[in-house]
Amino acid sequence: MRRLVLYSLVSFVLVCVITSCKNEQELAFGRYFANGKVLYENHCQNCHSKEGQGLGLLIPPLTDTVFLKANKKELGCFIRFGLKKEIKINNTVYNENMPADDHLSDMDIAQILVYVTNSFGNNQGYYSVLEANTDLKNCK
Amino acid sequence: MKNLIIIYLAAVLLQSCTGENKNTLPILGNRQVVEKEVNGKMVVDTVYQTIPPFSLTNQDSVVVTEKAFDGKIYVADFFFTSCNSICPIMHRNMLKIYTKYLNNKEVKFISHSIDTKYDTPSRLKRYADKLGVKGNQWEFVHGSYDAIFNQAAKNYLVTAFQDKTEPQGLVHDGWFLLVDKQKHMRGAYDGTKDDQVEKLMKDMDILLQEK
Image 1 (cartoon, rainbow over the protein chains, first blue to last red):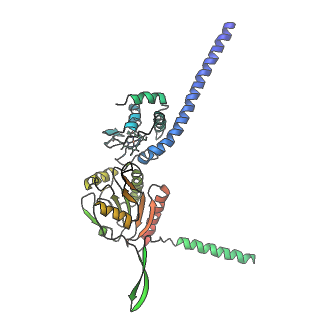
Image 2 (cartoon, rainbow over the protein chains, first blue to last red; image 1 turned 90 degrees about the vertical axis):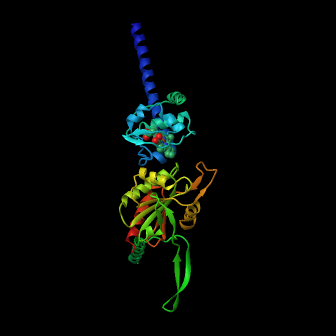
Image 3 (cartoon, protein in one colour; image 1 turned 45 degrees about the horizontal axis):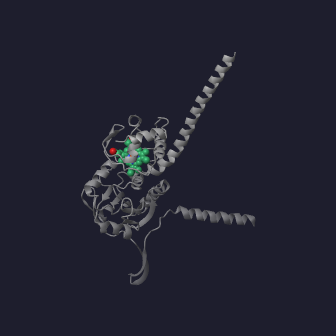
C-alpha cells in the first residue's frame, strides 16, 4: 500500500514537471514569436516584405521551408554577418547581397528566427536563445 | 421654420459633396502672376512651375529627355540600387503601380539614381531586369551629380543629398511625384506608405481623364 502511494506520488510529480515544462516552452514560444514579429518589422520587413515575399530577383522570399530547414543552424549567421553568395530559393537562383546586422543580440536573433520560421507558410517550432548562442559561435 | 433649416442644411451638404466630387488635383510648386497681352488688352495670368527640359541616360544607355514624357502623365522618384533602407519598400510599391498601368501608352515612370558615381547604366539595367521591368515604360536614369541633385531640389522639390555621417552616405526621402501631361507637378506621395500609394493610383486615374 505504501508503495502504491509512493509510486502514484512520483508519477504525479513527473507528469506535473513534464506538463509545466511543455507549458513553459509554449509560453516562451509565444513570447519569442511576438517579440520576433516586432524585430522583423524593424529590421527585415523593408527588404523581405510584410508577407515574406521579397522583391523580384533582388531579394529572395522567406517562404522556402526546405531551404530554411536545411540551413537552420546558419540562419543566425546570415543575419549577423550578412549573406553574399549564390543561393537557390524556391528553385530560383539569387546572387545578391544581404548586409550584416550587427546590432542584434543572440536573443533578438533567436526571436526573429522563431517568427520567420513559423510564418509565411513555415512551421518549424521553437528555437531557443541557447541554441542561438551555440549556432552563432560556430558561424563560418 | 424647422423644415427650412433642414432644407438649408441639406443644400449646404449637397454643395459640399459636389464640391468634393469635382476631383481636380492642385498644381504644386511655385507660381508667378504675369501680365500679358491678349487681343490688344493686358490680362493677368498665373504661370505654374513646370519640369524644365532635362537630358539623362537610361538603363539601356539611351539619352532620355523630357520629350519622352510629352503627352503622358508620369511618376518620378529618387533612389539608388544599393540602398538598403527605404528603397526596397518604395520599389515594391512602384512595381505595384507599374503593373497596374503596364503598357498604358499615357503612363510612364522615372527613377533617378542619386548614387551618381556607382549606378552606371549597366548597373541600372541589371537592377531593372531583376525587378522584372522590361522595355522603357519605366526609365531608370543616371546623370551627373549636378543634374540629378538639381532635378531633385529645384524641380521636384524633394530632399536628396550626400552626407558622410549617414550609414550609406546618401540621404533622400521616399516621395513619389506625380506629373501631368503639361509637366506640372500635381501630387507628392510617401512611397513607403500603402494608403498614400493607393491615393496616388486614384489621382493618376483622375489625371488620365484630363485633356
